[in-house]
Amino acid sequence: MQRFFAKVDVSPQGVQVSWPAPEVLSIWYYIEVLAHELGHHYRWQNRGRRGGVRLSAHEEFVAEIHSHRFYRTFLKRLREARERTEKA
Image (cartoon, rainbow, N blue to C red; front, top):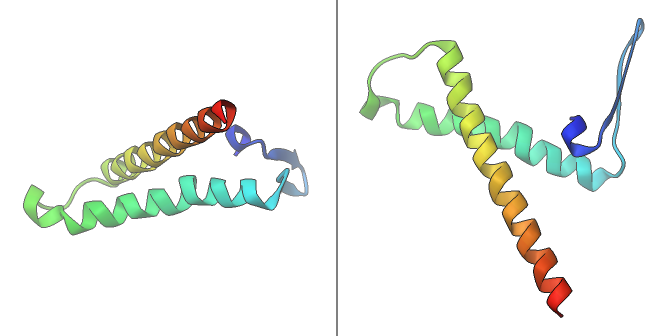
């Protein structure tokens, strides 16, 4: 969460997460939650072609790979948009 500029406060009463803007929360959700779950879906849909049941840690690893791929693509498109803006 801190990678997306969230402020995480841990206290004896619990954890409070504050976001600088709702849009940042949306981007975090897209990259870290939705993309991760899509990674699970991708793995589940392609399981029949690649063999039987995998270990839970392996499933999480594959989902994280897909999440990271979404993040890299997001950063690349953000850089490209910034460069187009600077050229204009």
